[in-house]
Image (cartoon, rainbow, N blue to C red; front, top):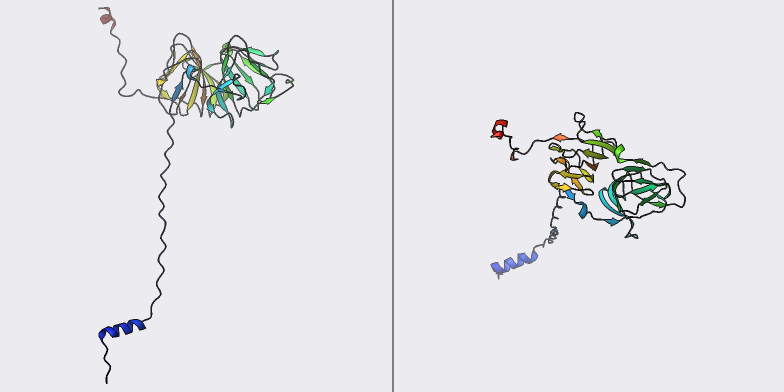
Length: 304
């Protein structure tokens, strides 16, 4: 008797006899990593100005809150050369000490005393300057009549080492205000603005200098290739949109920014400058929308 198979039975038979292929492992799932946002670009440097009344003072020595004060203008006193405004209280008298870097100081107000000892210290009045060589033990003080304020530039980190013994001799150099040798910035204008280099080389930069302006003088529109900081030593300085800056005020002008610098009032002006690169002056034209100066009327019309 023949066997009969249904189609369904045959399908089940062959399915049971089929060799099962091993299942392929699933591909690993890569974790989703969100891209970090790009860092925000550093803000572009901007020019700024600080009036003398708004200068922020910090103690030179944290344990002497009533002692010498300092306001940093450029550089870093912990790492290298820097310029700062320094204020000594009236009657201040330091101990004997030295600094590893050379100091150049220009007095704004008061009378600074500096020298081998307190007894041998020279009196340095407003507008005068001195150079104190590094590693030379010396004394620094201020007479009792008024606080002393000066700009100081060191060509290296500040540091300070107290000493019990005075130097064998002082090699400090003092220059009275009347003896500062300003040279014309423009040789064709011998009575115009002048400059004297204090530290560095203005042909290559960086450098520091004193700049003099006759009373009422104003420079033409110009720019500099390097950023600089200025501090008013005497007179009233006007620099672009910084307004009028009196003694002890300071400002920073970024490289390539067009501006004018002038001396207001009847007193001649002197300011200290610390420039980050070589000195240059590039003339600039007035903006097209600037108001043209009013033309003077002809003599005959003016008489009517």
